[in-house]
Length: 447
Image (cartoon, rainbow, N blue to C red; front, top):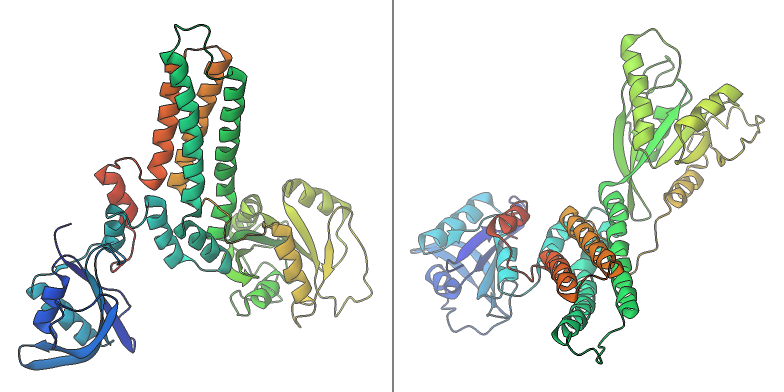
């Protein structure tokens, strides 16, 4: 924390590059390689000049100055905006190191921001989620967490837990005064249940968060040669899968993603379901059934009315799944109109793109994605989910103890453990060094 650190914050090779510097010696070190003395520069100012190596001019650039504590890291900091040449960027970093900087480790700027109180641990982790966000939904979730909405809800839970703990400890302190009653146990039970309900709501959002983060899995299934691969290519707007009139062309699952209305969907094209003696194709068909189990939505592609046996078999395989029947080749079989009980049916032509927009809307609706607002909190981090799950178990111990009329000191101890568990999420408690290292090791260098 005493070192002044530097790192490249942009990918090399572009038109412009940005190098970040943070630490108590930032302005002194910069002044040694810049054509202006920046040690007396005002905060939140930008300075034009040249980076020099002795008498040699290396590049012209702009330097942005930030003074502690009003910077990203809470320290004196600066950003050099220069040309994106790999040679120039490497040379500037080399000069900074020669004059007293140290190359930053992964996530070290954000780690310093956390350690200097600029953000809590959950907000720091949201920075990585924001960088990794690949669609509107994941961006919205990361921004909500970065702006402190998750932290606010945890702070509310903490206040309620402290109130519950305080009432129990007061009960303990004055236990020898039988005529005094500080809290009705029934009221304490209701308060504990309210806290537990809030914790469970946050924990249950993890499934939605993971689905949005990883992409909603959609399996494309059906017999051979009904147009599954053509449909995949049409949805992806790319020739991702081989299309052929030969039965059994697809022998393995093929996956790719698309964005529908700001949400990522992960499509899995599967081997056609049929009886075969080909050992490789049999393996592909077994993977088809595995893909169905992993999927949240199943697109059952047909080109004619399926037999009752086929309907029964697919119904058994897709229990608890959202199934959409896609009647392909409607341009050829336009008079082949039928319905199948319990399944929505959408006629399309994957070859010509007919009705694909209707199918995409149906897929989005089948995902049943909750409407998100900027203030909504969706848990996406496995560490947070683990802490919430343990906090729920802790509250259950408290409720069980109240039901057994345990003494206030035992209940208060359980509540303190719940408080400590929730504090792990924001880092309000002293967090072990190895935990911090594990959190920040996957950050990009320069962030």
